[in-house]
Image (cartoon, rainbow, N blue to C red; front, side, top):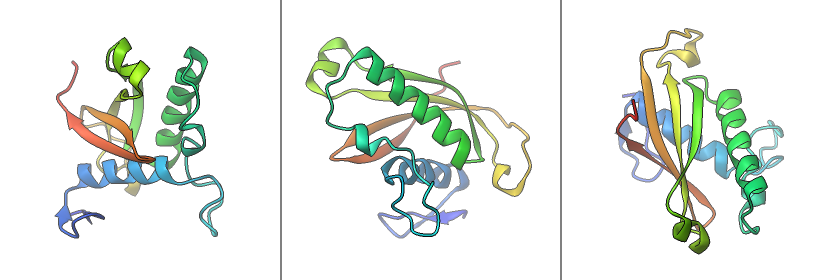
Length: 136
């Protein structure tokens, strides 16, 4: 056991805990945490805007920087768009994030124990991370 699932209250492993942390990072508005005003990603403020190539690029950059800054168990390799052109037009797109998995990164150990891939979608203003098979 590494943590407690915030939705079910059940124990979760270290990887699920890291995914839950990413969800928290992406759904926290900058300035929302009183004692840690700089925590968050700033993605919530971008939701609902007209999707353009520049905005997708901004999303990808903010996602990678936020994960690298706030979740030490991950080091981002790549962030890709998931879905077809029609999905994008309907607002049903998501992202695929490929990371170096460092299970003891939060303890100061940067040893990489593999590459992991997870999906990230925004549903009703909330980020949802889902595990996916590795793309390698």
